[in-house]
Amino acid sequence: MSDRQPIIPEGSQGSYDRFHFAPAFKVGNTVYVSGVIGSGDDGSVPESPDDEFANAFASLSATLEAAGASMADIVDITSFHTDMPDTLGKFMKAKDAVLAEPYPAWTAIGCTALAIPGARAEVKATAVIPD
Image 1 (cartoon, rainbow, N blue to C red):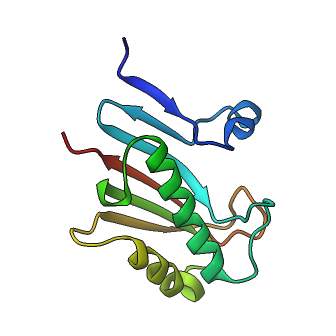
Image 2: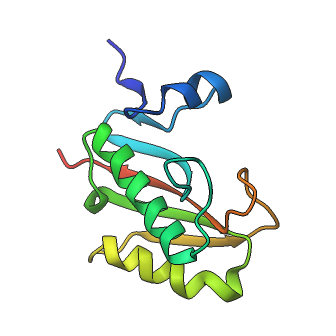
C-alpha cells in the first residue's frame, strides 16, 4: 500500500474533478496543502480583506483536518499577495489568530493576480504530523 494519497475535503470533489488538482497531498506524515484563497461559500471574494484572510485560514484548517493534521502541525507557509503594502498587516493578524509558537517558516511573495479575480492573497502550507 502506498503512503501517498490525495486529500479531498468534503465539498472539494468538484474542484478536484474540474481543475485536476488535489486540495492537499499526504505523503507519509507530511501534508502538502495547495494554495487556498479566502473566497466565501458562494465562491466570491469578500469585500473585507479581514474576512477574506479569515476564510483562507479556515479553509486551510479544514483541509489539514481532512488529512489528520492541525494548524499546530504547520512547518512552512508561503503566501502570495496582490497588494502587499496595503494588506500584509491584516494578513498577519489573521495568521497570528490561528497559529501559535513555535511559528512556522513563512515566505510572503508579491504578485499581480491570483486565480480568483479580486482575491488579495493565497496561502499554501506544509504540515508534519507528529509520530
